[in-house]
Image (tube, rainbow, N blue to C red; front, side, top):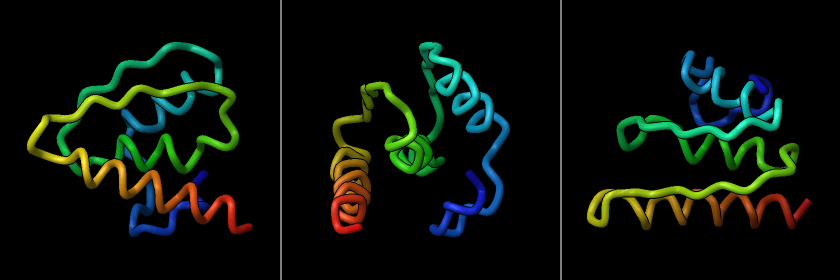
Length: 81
């Protein structure tokens, strides 16, 4: 996981590590963390390896465009390779 992080995130926070571990075990995960803390990034980074789905909820004025842009950029990069 750490090798794939190329957005300045060097080591995943403890909550990110725990969430990823639970997802890899096929468990349901609910995460509440501040905007910009890496929730979408961690899931999108690992999405090709996880056979699962995600629902992201964001404040209506805070970050929907940012979350969508981040996931869209990653999806485009995945399809290009």
